[in-house]
Length: 291
Image (tube, rainbow, N blue to C red; front, side):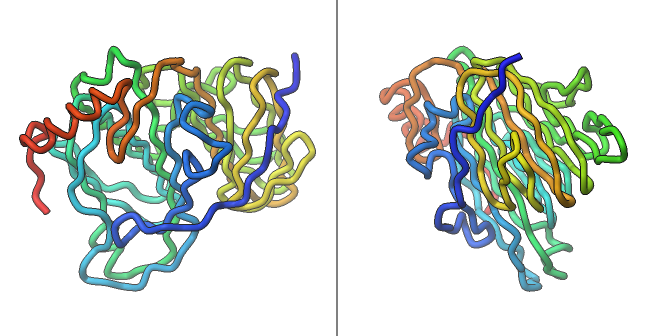
């Protein structure tokens, strides 16, 4: 089986605030090498590196805003996030949990630090990933999947090297609980010192990872916390080794190979569909959500 080589390793770009609660590094599409087309079906990746949040009786976050044409995948590594949307979806995700919201034909949602956690404050760390929807599903029914960590697929690594936690797709026959609209593999590799694992994905899939904690050797080359690793197209397998305790988020997906027209909170196939999304939003067709 041919090795899937590293294309590049990137340090995090400058941060910006999303609302007043999320201070993020925008890797996709904020870095020139990581355009939506280059990472299709992954069209956005915001990474909130570990930061201290001071105690507050008023939770910080981002108020009601619209989306259409894709899915938001929010992974909490430290801290707690509360979500509500105009389709009736919502809940609290704690450390290690995931919320997978399908915006599809249109939805309003809001995300804040969870109320009780906000009163205490602490360290906050999260990833939000946007996965594109195929054209046939872009105007479908919105949906919300709450994925507690306890429901994820789990495969123990040899020699007490840690484990692989499968959110979507599968790893060595262990499947994740998330339902996806196109073939997507999404998983956390949670290594103990000395842990090692091999990953195999189809050569045509766009594949990348972000180091959440510690350091990881990728095919022998070291990637450190907060760095993003993009693999070349072609080749199927790569190896991760952990010289210390480490966590890495690994993503691999089949490109949709469809036109991408994106503006702000909408990801569609044509500019006309973007204009229509704004018209529909302004006419209140995305529902209602309290501030």
